[in-house]
Image (cartoon, rainbow, N blue to C red; front, top):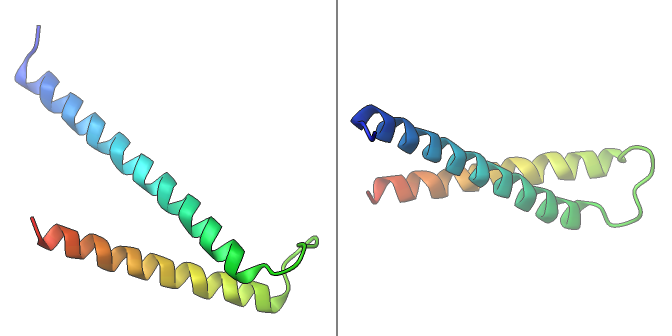
Length: 77
């Protein structure tokens, strides 16, 4: 009992799941990259001001570059 709407619903669901997986991967990469770059000693109960600033800047640069890459790929289609 395949109907066009069921197939469309399935495609939509699969696309949403793919986007969720990509976001999870992006967050994982961001965490790995920024943690390794900004946290140079054993973390205490909270980050120092320089670690906080570094993490904030690193995350912003990472997200900006990811957005640029995504737009570039979208423009190729």
